Each structure stands twice: as C-alpha cells, then as structure tokens.
Image 1 (tube, helix red, strand yellow):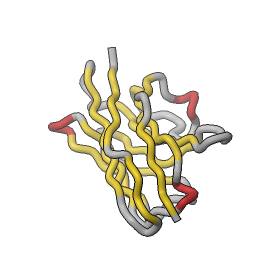
Image 2: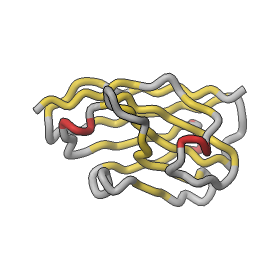
Image 3: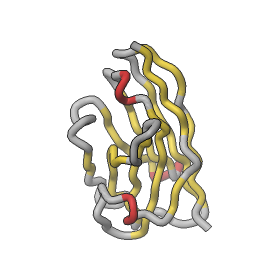
Amino acid sequence: QVQLVESGGGLVQAGGSLRLSCVASGRTFSSYTMGWFRQAPGKKREFVAAITWRGRNTYYADSVKGRFTISNDNAKNTVYLQMNSLKPEDTAVYYCAAEVGIVVVHTESSYNYWGQGTQVTVSS
C-alpha cells in the first residue's frame, strides 16, 4: 500500500518561502509520477506541479511558474515543493499525489494515491 505523508506547511508572510516535503513509502517509486495539488477554502482542488520520478520532467501551473520548484530525492523517496515569493492567494491545503507511470499530470483523477495534506497560509 502506498503511503504519502506531507510536511512543511505553516504560516508565512507574503514574499516569504516554504518548502513542502512528501515522503512516499510502500512501493518502489522509480516509475511513478508525483504531483502537488492545492485546495483553497470554497474552491476546487487544483494542480500545482508534477515530476516524473525517473525522467525528472517537471510541470507547473501557470500561476506558480517561476516561483515554485518541484524536485525529488530518489534515495529518500521524497518529493519537495520549494515555494518562493509566496502570495496570499497561495493559501491552501497542499496535497501530494502519486501514480504509476506517465499520466495526465494536471488532472486530479489521474492519481490514485494521496496524502492527508498540509496547510499553507500566506498573510498579507
């Protein structure tokens, strides 16, 4: 059974930075696609970023391009989301997601495995 555990969320002022981590366990993740999604209050969950574990291709939502960076550490089975120049509109619960193989990365239904989420709050 795949388990994903996020950490690193918190409260930060606008313009600040946070790094989220997602530790994956239960499988060998060399062929997985890993994604980050977020859900703000009253809004649908939306795609943020994704990375193919083996190919290390990265994908970003337009709203975070140039500010967020997704990366992974194979040895630690961990995916990171470095978030810089944070804005109040980045406030949301951030979720890590995983799926085997190459998927349509920005589509929520592409992923079968999800973490519990970590809260990110950006104050103005």
